[in-house]
Image 1 (cartoon, rainbow, N blue to C red):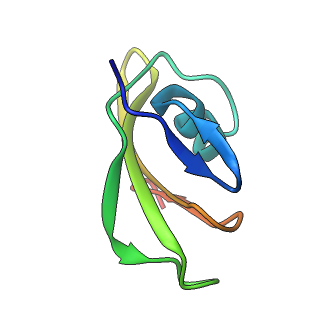
Image 2: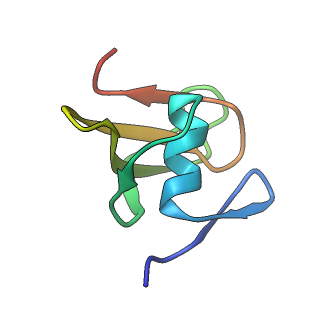
Length: 75
């Protein structure tokens, strides 16, 4: 079972975290991990998740647990 985490005061699954990063639904997501970085906006903790927004693409995404900051390896 995937580990859920708290993001901006709400419990999220790996799939939901990927959706927050991507802005739309995803096909699949890997377990959430702690990132080795702090948020550049608020210095909060950052989570990382790998996910598939489509059958042909794998993306790594980062999301701050405290604010709206998010990034993907596409950027």
